[in-house]
Length: 272
Image (cartoon, rainbow, N blue to C red; front, side, top):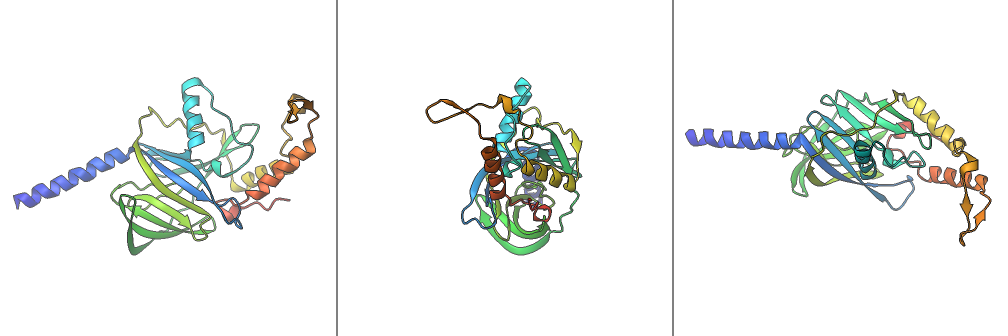
């Protein structure tokens, strides 16, 4: 009886220790995604899920570096020239009671946030497999007009996951939609050593319809906010030439259409 009691206590201490460590960890995910639903190949981006106590932030390696620099020197590296998949930036606070999807407006550098109110109704499956070093169990849910398959491990007792996903009885190690347009997989775990999360400050919260308008306006005239007198163009020989703003506009619009495969299909903008 004493041996059984000791063994139970030892197992309990291990679980507590793992939970404490998980509460201050950086979970590194690799995202393989298709920029367009008809694409035959995928691209890769590295994302970090930084967890500190009861808060977390999920962002690309690029955004994370920029946030770190802003915390140290007062400003970051700026934003991309478009609303693309680098903008999968999400904060979760107070045990996921508040989830915000950040929106970074190109050129003018405004920072908005969309509150995510969807609740995940996970359907647990008996299927299990090992992914990396973790024993995982399968679960399914609907989000953003897509059906998702997740693999979670209770070896890390943290109800967290990449992007907006949460609510399973363990960390989500891998999650992908049925078309494999988006496939997140955990590739590394590190201790989170920063003093704070250094998330960007949100100027205001907006709705999905507002986000659609922002995207449509940007597509209609992506160089509207550019001070054309400040733009200088050069040819291959380094000679100054006249800037072709029409060509610049059409080039940006083409890239927007080529990458119009948002993770939330139910909020996709059909650009006009």
